[in-house]
Amino acid sequence: DAKTTQPTSMDCAEGRAANLPCNHSTISGNEYVYWYRQIHSQGPQYIIHGLKNNETNEMASLIITEDRKSSTLILPHATLRDTAVYYCIVSVLRGSARQLTFGSGTQLTVLP
Amino acid sequence: GAVVSQHPSWVICKSGTSVKIECRSLDFQATTMFWYRQFPKQSLMLMATSNEGSKATYEQGVEKDKFLINHASLTLSTLTVTSAHPEDSSFYICSAVKSSTDTQYFGPGTRLTVL
Image 1 (cartoon, each protein chain N blue to C red):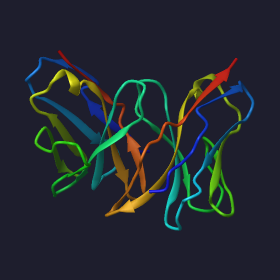
Image 2 (spheres, rainbow over the protein chains, first blue to last red; image 1 turned 120 degrees about the horizontal axis):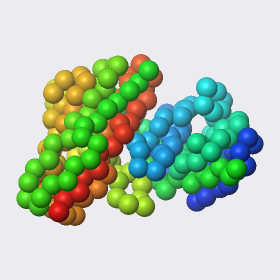
Image 3 (cartoon, rainbow over the protein chains, first blue to last red; image 1 turned 30 degrees about the vertical axis):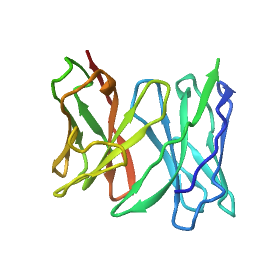
Image 4 (cartoon, each protein chain N blue to C red; image 1 turned 180 degrees about the horizontal axis):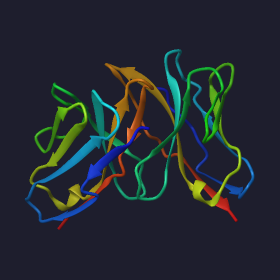
């Protein structure tokens, strides 16, 4: 599986956009980029995923570079409740389902 | 929606006893579910893949006879920690794959404490 590299921690002011980067330089053609977040002592929450096109949903936007070696998760208007560990994961299809390998993630702290 | 529940949310047991954790997909069917374990200040580690109607696939280093997995239906998978020891104390999290979106949705987790 392609490995990902994320900053250990980031701060963001409440109401501003939070841009979380992720490097996945060894990603291969059939591997998707998934983003999840985990608030302390809870299960991970799905945010968004994509293959090569940029994606947007009600939670966030995902920008994937043309060479697919990196991506950025954008939370357009961060709130205090967005404080969490954010995981960027490159998944590969194994059998009938995509496996996720969690790294260390980025601790995002939204400051008032 | 894609809601996954786990029961119990927390459990305390004595060393040597067995504990069963249930994982249910509430509003979708899941052929595949996963079980993870998370120790304090660490990331999630995949333990096993649970497939409905077939045997689970365990990750390297995970004892299949200690962590029994049964995927009884398309909405239920169970993890039984047998002969639990204090080192099995951890946060156990399941996920269920919603095939229409090819996405894993996670349960809220179960905190196991073995005394």
